[in-house]
Image (cartoon, rainbow, N blue to C red):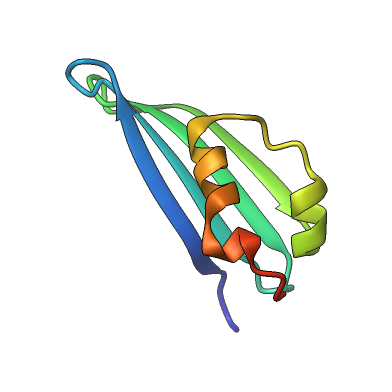
Length: 87
């Protein structure tokens, strides 16, 4: 694998006019580790407000990491990929 591979992606919006956009994307890195990127965008201004990166050497380590309790994290934890014990 020459570049990281996207495993999971989800986005959601908030506000009456969808002013905020939230994304969560999980990648498999070239060293077989994982990178989880959580982002918050201001759609009115077209700006990235916040971006958090979480790195883990294995799926088990990622599962032990405190990822918070946000809506997108809950959806990740309910996903087939998260529930599956495969590496």
